[in-house]
Length: 105
Length: 183
Image 1 (tube, rainbow over the protein chains, first blue to last red):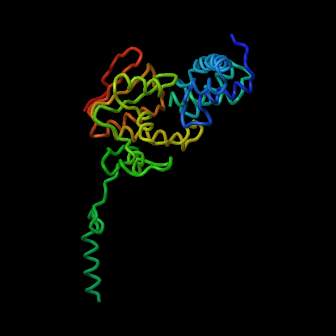
Image 2 (cartoon, one colour):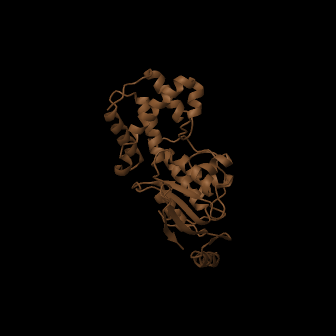
Image 3 (cartoon, chains in turn blue, orange):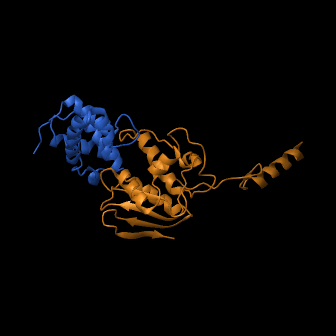
């Protein structure tokens, strides 16, 4: 069941990128402390919970088992996630695909 | 004059089959697709950029090589694999590619699964890490291995590395160990 977003979509995009390190670091960082520092404890905790739910859904993808190569894996895991979370921001999809492909490279 | 040409031709004919060129021995090259074993010449050159290959491996110059029984690889262990592997080595000893790079200030280009050059750079760094390994090597592995996984290249490089004695797979969840290869 798709959980309703509790946070502002633009803020969620920002939070996902902050937490994963996508666009900022050479490889995924998953930095809880950085997120809490940026958004404050209350808001940060709410965002973190939502991010981890999204990540759980993203990692349900079996792209790493079926993809021919890394680029194919990136495409497949993104498509799997979009099917689970229709309307999800492309930036969030890309950030998690960045993490997923790094883990399964 | 014709005698001079005859002598010159004779000299050329005699030295043509030699593997030396002006006193320098030609370096034997591995066939295409074959990993050259690590040696002091193939590891230890400068690293400034992200497009490099094994024959011009610059990472090792900054010290990508590890001590005996130190190198730990990881592949297919799920979410946050590098952090899981880093936590594992902090408990059991050893160094991963990422912990080695962090400790020695080595930087690779930002990971980008859609950029072939970037993927190649990470693949090459991983292979160099294998070429600089020594002794008994460990790899943290889950239950499945991707067809095109970088670990496959690392495994070949480890086998071609004369300083490596064995490769052991460890499941970080169960602790189960399997000897994958030994010399």
